[in-house]
Image (cartoon, rainbow, N blue to C red; front, side, top):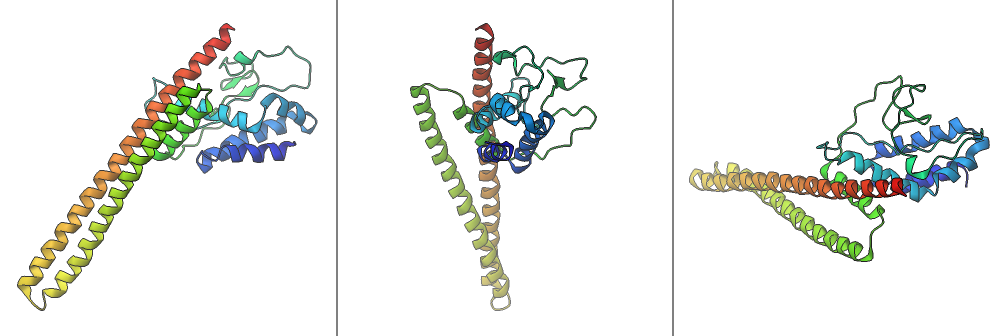
Length: 258
């Protein structure tokens, strides 16, 4: 496997991320490969591990930072920092310390162990990101939750919960579609009422009133159900993100003790 193949596999494994965030993650490791040099491609691949495994680490790290208790919303998405690869012989870095944020004063702010931290640019101001939708945040949180090692019982329960969530969202989307149908019917009836005014004013007013009522009810229902979908997705993403954060912190602490 060479650099191009590795990055292609990594991009495929990160398809759950929005396009902009996926591009940034791949570009991060592409630059890392370039800095290491062609002669060190095999060493970099050996250090990073399989693309699917690295993609899981990236997802877990993203959700871990987004839904930490001291943050309310997901603001930025950036890749997991890669371990440093140096052609010169050096002491091996313990696995549990590869992702600790220990700034190196010689490298400047935003660097750790010679490798730039995610989202930190030493001489460039980070560009503002587009906020991802609530459903996208829920999808990323679920992907990160499935990326964490789980016992068979917990995994089965998680599958059951996901099925229930899917049923709930299908029901809500069906209600949104029904609201759209009522809204469209209101528009059609309203147009018919306006036309009827020229034939029979009394009947036209009745039809026009019915059409406007349907139109208002449709808009009210659609706004309400769409808002409910967003709130539900945001709440579930925060719940699952909090679980990922806790489990990741426990695993990091256990690895540090070991």
